Image (cartoon, rainbow, N blue to C red):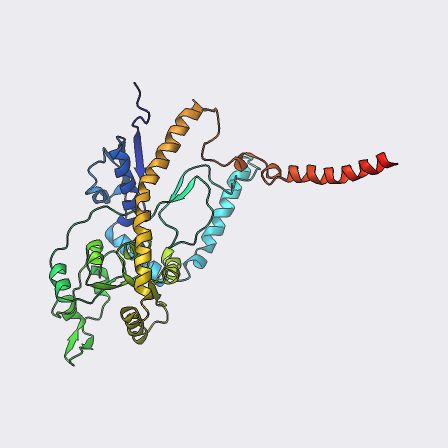
Amino acid sequence: MTPPTPPRKILMVVTVGGYTHAAPVLEIGKVLAQRGHVVDFATLEGQESWTMGYEYISQLHLMGHGPSHEDLEAYYLRMQENQLVIFKALPSIIKWVKWTKQIRQDARVNYPLPAPSKPNYLVLINSFFGLEVSKDIPPLVQEIRPILADAYPPLSEPYEGFLEKHKKTLYLALVIWSISEAARRDIDTSHQFSGTGGKGFTFASLLKGEHSSFVITTFAPQRVILDHDHTVIYLTYGGGSSANEGLYHRKLMLAIGFFFDQISNVPRLVASGTSEALDKFRFTPEEVCQKIKLLSEDIDGLYKRNCTRMQRIARAASRRKELGADLIEEVMYDTEGRFDGEKELRPMHLQTADMRMSTFKARNWDLWLVGLVTLGVVPLASITVGK
């Protein structure tokens, strides 16, 4: 007897981006594998390590050469330094638009590409209402964030010992790693600082771990550090994963966005009542100190109250990766049943009816027209009968 939800072979593909872009996909794949599906993963060479800890993957497919570590470092550096990249890219964009238009003309394609207001495919959004502003979304678009791993490695040295000795710790991570090797090359390691006791120290001594109040590493186990009670404030760049993890682990955040989604995430974190923002162009040491004081003192208790509120929302929402897997199965089984070869027998069950109608019908203009005509005809008929 065929099971009601038979297992299928599913291919997940992640090419560009870093591990944090692949992790949500791999987490949903884990749920699908637990339901009996055979799950393959495709990526670029050099990114095979992303699958570590995801032993459910049946087969790994490599789709070509991936970017080297040096390529990625140079790319992120360009993004940080070049604020006008979109304007500099305009000539290339215009050239591409003209090229595309010419190809369509040569092929005698004279109709516009379809631009539906709602997708006819499944879109899973790694976000949740509370961080995002609530809005109406169609059935084929669902927010299932935060997609986070259910477990992570325990705290180890030197982090465990440091956090036990420092009960009010600020955790700073503006990239996946705390201060990468490339970033260290750009630091003036001879720069002098003065501690609270007047004792001087340099960046070089900080990087060597010679100051007891600092731990600087090229990589930090973020989830377990954020989960520790002695981590009081999280200074973050506000990326999607960082925002999720900060809220999930109930941390006060000082956020400074640099590019892409970070720019929009920072005001959302501030609006949630859990965070304060820094402007990357204009912030000063005095402002950093003032906002750290504002967060840590929390005079009226609203920061911690909102941290608790957002943590509870995030933890409840984090269970939605099961919903993500549900929707993938729904669309998959629906597609199998509504096609006979290449012939479509019926529309998608999650597609709203208005997407299969003309604008005239979808907006009920036909009914309005009938109503208006009726309102005009009835009085006219009454007058005629009266005469």
